[in-house]
Image (cartoon, rainbow, N blue to C red; front, side, top):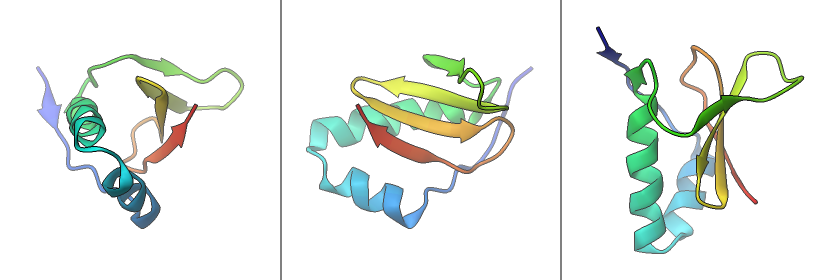
Length: 77
């Protein structure tokens, strides 16, 4: 059985996403919607040596999230 959660993006994350091309915005949005489902869906792995921090890969972008929270951080690689 899966349940859904509401994710809240930080102001910095929203600014970052808005600056991206429309195609990239849609790709990130689609990937983030997988995080709202429990268990989460997507290319998600725990970060070694970082406690309960998980990462979601979206192309060259990384979304990090402490497991079980709604806090998100987006990095470009």
